Length: 312
Image (cartoon, rainbow, N blue to C red):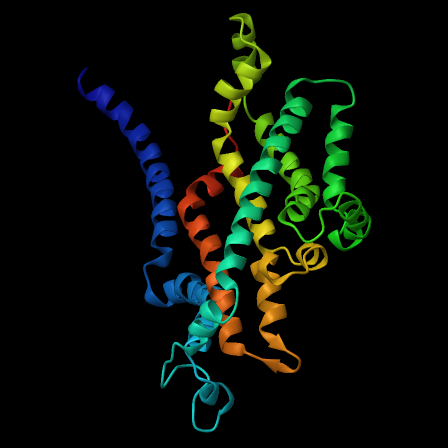
């Protein structure tokens, strides 16, 4: 009798907990089983992915097929389909690389983009660290003012900047672009790094100060290693804007050998009302590959920078 009583006492508890557990498990199972059926997977997964891939990859596909099309295929839609190549040719690539200064344009674009990116990152790191970590009076207002400077359209800034470029004798040189690109790169990079520095715990910095580290040592040995994803994200942003910039490069550069890819392709491959579409698409395709490769190498750091650095 003594052994049977505890068993009967525990049976209601088991009965009460059983449906609850089964209910919770059933809900979870139902949620996981939602995509088991093929029609639901098609509507919620496959179809959106196909639409996204089409929108994303179709411009590259169009550039590739146009690059290898002859002029006859480009303009004759009755005998040739516009969506694939029947008789591929390398004439457009030969014209781009051997009849224009496209290799020099690529080199100019690379030099300007890399130097402007590193210069902007250096200034943004110094400004972002000072605003977020030194905690001086009015730091928030300074940070907001820096971000508001980014909202000023470049089409307005290039008018006063052109006066300064002419005054210092920098017109038609790479330095004209290297020194003017940071005007729109530094504000956003600073604002981005400010948010990333804010996510790093202050206790790390306080411990380093107690151990006798200087501010420069803290920045180089503690803050920057933790902020690598944020630095890469800001660097990709700055490099992409520098690579694709058009207004300043068109205004401050006049000679053919000093032009960048966005300006050189448009100005040299359009002769009056004649558009060399094959070479234009080849130039656009080759010009977009470095940025695509850069994103592919650092996409993990770029995504991780969106979630912050170290959580307290």
